[in-house]
Length: 315
Image 1 (cartoon, helix red, strand yellow):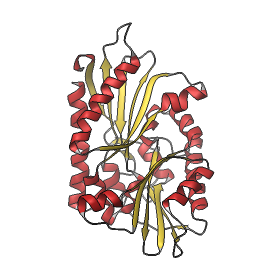
Image 2 (cartoon, rainbow, N blue to C red):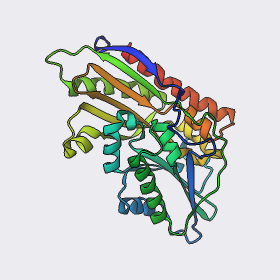
Image 3 (cartoon, rainbow, N blue to C red):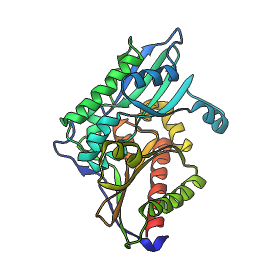
């Protein structure tokens, strides 16, 4: 396995974006909240509303069940992590920005607190910063508007909650990317190459507590139906770890705008390189104003585990 991969680069940690992102005052995460005294709003009804708004829900997971089993405690009446995307706009953005896979799918947290229901998602500024995409890109703007439309469809009487997280390094992205040289022969089966890597990746991740609640084969699911033939493969994984999201969610339930973390893996046709990447945890820390040392340690430990696994597989 390891003889066909050669690790060559870890990059894009704290890269300056210049005019790509928004001002320091622009929040990267938004919370849409509504009164739910009658209990009519639920994770299921939010699923349905997002679907009616043109967004695909790739998973909506009740986190209180595993939290109760593992930690014997929960912080909210309900707490869900969901994955969603706009297929048309995702394709447009992936064509222009191949690394947009780190936001395909996007994520949100859904939680009820007393008599309110809340949904957190990335703002336009958050999408721009995380994806390193100009904030005035028309497709990114349209994506942000489609999210707002879905939120208002899900909770017609809702409103955006005022939040004032101190945004550190507003013009930097903390995503982590790897490029790997491939030893490709004429008879190399690209699908087999990908599957061998993914089997080893999953085999290393699962024993140390990482879950993969979502998986997308964008080649089959999005590119081929649209007649887009630029890749040998393009997959994304949704990755979660209970020991990370549980402590973080206590004070910042809106952290689900970044979780589960999306990890992309792709190879373009005609290249002998495979590319991987995901959002660095410092995006969470520097945009959600996280100060709890236990939460920060859990985030950074998990990030390092993924880095170490990739290096081990590819070196």
